[in-house]
Amino acid sequence: MTRTEKQKMLAGDLYCADDPELAADLARTAEWLARYNRPAALAPSERLAMLREHVGAVADGVVIRPPFFCDYGFNIRLGRNVFLNFNCVILDVVAVEIGDLTQIGPGVQILAADHPRDPEQRRALLENGRPVRIGRNCWIGAGALILPGVTVGDDAIIGAGSVVTRDVPAGATVVGNPARPVRGSA
Image (cartoon, rainbow, N blue to C red; front, side, top):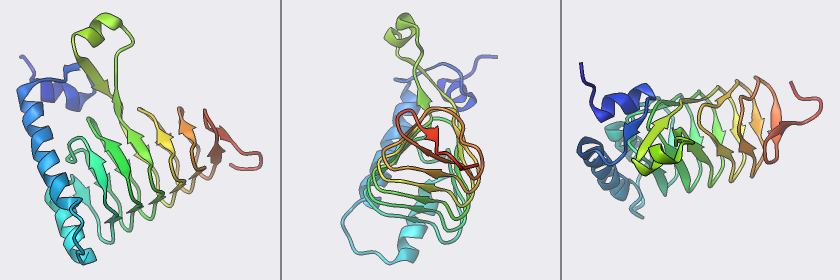
């Protein structure tokens, strides 16, 4: 059975990024983002309704301050009372899950999209993804980068500007590039 490029993408396998079905999904998301990011004064309930129109799962109390950017939206799962400040980016070619009560600072990038290390595969426009999971009650400081395949445990703190290249244990505080645990954290 031959799988579509979208099915390959969703499975985290190599897929062709310029596939027409994926291009149509990206176009729909771009249209939705243009509406969501429009500088209109909307009530929190109206913004939440807009998120629920396009994002995979949005629990009660979620707030995403515009501008916000994502690839598809349908792979994003947001728990109760999640907060994303201005200018956040989520590249969601595969699942990106953010747990209840997690707070994310401005300019944070959560990147589930990855690229092959082999130059021939890149020339062929192949990409893949690795899921990102962020636990409950985490705090991610401004400008942090969370790279593909990373899991952040519950109650973790990621310092501003940190580049998270590996899993963060529950309760840990990590800082720097690459992010490393602060002494005395979990």
